[in-house]
Image 1: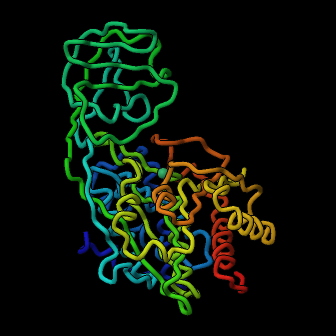
Image 2: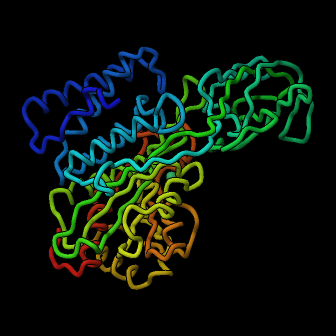
Image 3: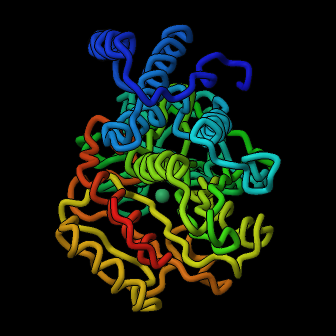
Length: 432
Ligand SMILES: [Zn+2]
């Protein structure tokens, strides 16, 4: 990965004529490929490679105050190349290397002075190969018509199904269970069950399941290697006071050889906001140090952020405030701020920025919640907020959470809100 040419492309802060040409060629190319290739299916490796080179080159032409930067980053991070930033096709590792390279190109220092990557490992059940399910002689589409429950054991079998209740059907000999669902929501499991549970969208079948044929591969990876990406812009006056901005970059990865979960809202959107801020602060160092972490292992249970709090790369007591974001891609109904009631002074500061600059329609306060990467920091006494956007599309942990339908309408306002909030935290008067 490190030897690939595309990650050596440095961001150009001026759009050259060449880039304009390149961008329009890219748009034409993207339009062409969208006609030729069905969604999520890029059979030819070379074609995939070309597409990624174009997307990343495109993403690298951003201006700090160019808010199409966010859009290009979301487009890039959701390409098949990164395969849902998960557990097959090296998706998470490719994303890690890409993000470390972005940090470097913005002028961030590695948080530990040596490497942007903070490695750790954990067990995960993965689905790298076959993913075929036929019910009542109808071939179902992975992701759209069915998902396998994340703890599912690989199986190749066929037979009849007995009714357990109105939504569950079983073949006891093969330990295959079919469960009908209104909405398919995928997840990650650290272990493998003794059964194979297949969750089927009710809309995919017109009568109750009676027979099945399945061919599913799984592989338990006991020590999946992941890494947090950690960078820093040193403060000019009080470098030991640090403001953290965090967002997880991992998502669910792939389910079988041909299907992946792009995770545009969850959390390419938050990472694109973090990258835009890192880009900005790289060019505008502040009184305090500004630190950035893209966490891994969030979807597997906040593993990366927990690991960081147990193995911090700088003293946790130096953290003046941490702002984590996860699901930052909508916002027509504003945002919700977790820990607002824990830190009322800072919540009032954030609201003051929002009122002064007329940014979001609403900032909802919420109490403590163990729902994203701020959580273990809060537990260690680090003051923190976690915000997520409200309104817009409802896709979540499914194949429909994709860049094309993500509005990303509040990216610029969120950027300005965080910059303004950080200024207040530092007692600074300069304004964006
Ligand atoms: Zn998330």
